[in-house]
Amino acid sequence: MASHKICLMNDSFPPIIDGVANAVLNYAENINMLGGSAAVVTPKHPEAEDERYPFPVLRYPSIDMRKRFGYMAGYPFSPELSRRLQDWGAELIHSHCPIASTAFARELRNVLKVPIVFTYHTKFDIDIARAVRGKILQDSALKMLVKNISACDEVWVVSRGAGENLRSIGYEGDYTVMENGVDLPLGRLERSRIDELIGGTTIPEGLPVFLFVGRLMWYKGIDLILKALAMLAARGQDFRMVFIGDGADSSEILQRVSELTLDGRCIFTGAICARDELRAWYSRADLFLFPSTFDTNGLVVREAAACSLASVLIEGSCAAEGVANGETGFIIKNDAAALSELLASLCQTPDTMRRVGDGAASGLYISWHDTVARAYERYGAVIEKYRRGEYPEHSGSLEDFFDFQGDIMDGLSRAGRFGKNVAADLSARTAEVHDDIKAKGEAIRIGIKGHGKAIRCAVKDGRDKLRDTRDELWSKMSRYL
Image (cartoon, rainbow, N blue to C red; front, side, top):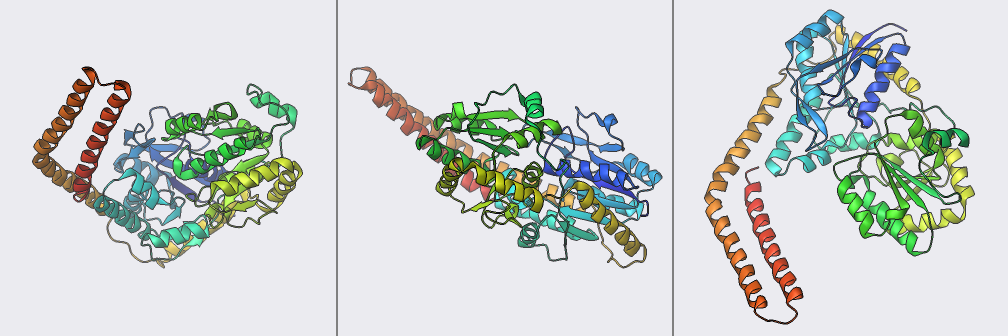
């Protein structure tokens, strides 16, 4: 197999841990094992420890957005890095994120004269809708994203569902399904090794153990899990539910657990980077719960399968692609009652969970080595095709990135001008609501019986009015964003 130098690009990389960062890490490691050379290009991170990797990690300027989004936002400009890659002799750029990474990849292509392969991992329309409030900015972000992807020489998707999602946001070109793999070895750990790795967590023997691994975000289906578990507890069934991961919605999720009185049954470990420890949890659990309709591939489903752990998945989701109900996993409707019913049944028939878990191991597992070997073979074909001039010319590089920044500034400018016009009105209406609350409170103070309940009602009424005022203002401002 020919030796190629591959530049891997992504907006996240350890110490930031997510599914795509894990994919890039495994691509880099396996490219080296296959006789090639990999270099990772990613935004700067203050806590990075890049010297521990057997391949170069090259970082470009970034803006710290961890408090808002959990990521370092890459600023795709670095002539020095371009020169380093040119000296290194990069033959192909493989981008795994359609925003800053691909914008930078397009600029690098102009300098290095090499092709770009892009992999679509994530439903970015959902991510953008969460991160950007305002239809004009959302449309502008999606337009930039699709232009970036369309400017690549070859496009890969991690599942058929990912390809359908890519089409739905406006991409019209061709794509190839190139699945992700699993870096866990096939086989469940022995109980002694499990206890050694996670023995500090006390779980009573004989109780069914359910597991979730991923970012703690509501769109992962976590609310459905919690509702189903509350129903299961109401039946009198005891269990333990382990959540591994972290995310922006973690505090709300913990609050929801308390509201449903599931505190004693739910265990939150935080993010786990050590692969042996993660493998121990997969081996300790009886069933993996992954009711996400957001994920495009469900890599964690195949990680669970590596440890003979069956998954519960939503009918029609990307994560359920290739999973046979009752043979290599369990498929349910997107409904908490359906999940609760299934869990109640399986708790009474643990042999079924073990049997389907064994089916998952034999039917779903695919190693990163096999996956990257297929991709690496394709790299060679893309490089040769590019050198023969068989890909269309792609004009422009960072112009779309600048256009998007311009749309943001224009939207904020409009919102600012609008805000000045409504500020006085908002202030007056807020003062009016406060005066109303004060008047009610004063009336109560001088002797109305049941004053505690009345005060609470007055305050709630005032808060509702303030919220309605705020929502009305935002609705008007959204026209400009």
